[in-house]
Image (cartoon, rainbow, N blue to C red; front, side):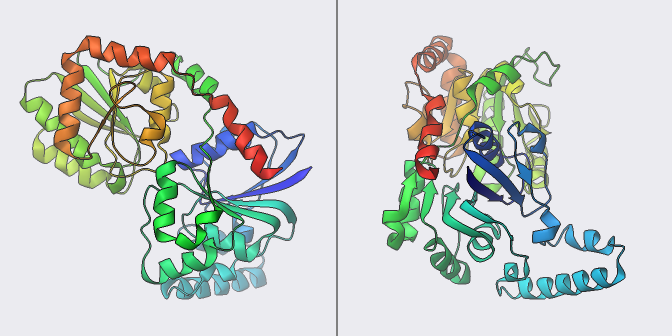
Length: 385
């Protein structure tokens, strides 16, 4: 059996995490023996992994500035407590001055055939290189842009080149990586994220009471409330619709570091009765099924998970023209693909509100497509075996 380790930032509610869960569930456990290490103890999606796997202890191998001190302080062995806290203080100092703090993390004793950094976030790519013994090492890149500069960029130049392959999750994602890392061009390959179509359809059919008011035209977005997802574009587009006299309610499922900022904009524009921040939902698929249209206002993406889910559930979709969208959709045939600005989003939504026949045409086109999601796992097996 192939021994494979997945190292991730955490297993919270999010697109990257969902894709990792889908991948683990698709792997054949007659072929792979799977270990998972979350460098942060965030486990919201842990219970959704149905395949056999071993979860490694975060605190045995990793440290962070949020949970580690509390954990170490609870240690009953006095000498171990002093040793751990001393190491943690050193970690905080080294982290503050940007001097490779993961070097203080414990190495994994086990040897693997394959080690995967399933994200470019946090210390994940560096930990896999420095602290994991594996015959092959791969890094998944899920960002629609590259935001590193200075020391971070030099660090990534050094570490990304040590991977056997860097996996881009869309064509645009590969192009962006090649722009910043031209020396890696030959090692960057494209593999689309795993999509669990059956699970999405099953969960969408659950009979639950949700917040969507069917007396209004309902618009839905699912995503983190962060800058790259474009929540302020959605709020401003919603304001334009309200001012034009459209009876709409826009629901945003997801949380993030811009939640208070977006809430303030909603209040300033006076549309708190039309734009709702619902927070994270364990089953967002009911919301997709019951909304009238799905809108993705992102400023950039690598390969959006939620638009994939919306097309599986055959919803009329408006999405911005960002990474991976043209891998998923044909403009004006299976979705409306627009510029990432409030006016373009507003105009596309207005077209769909006013033209039920066009909405039905988009839905019909989605139903005719066979995206062969079930075949995606073959690309992973080609890489791993």
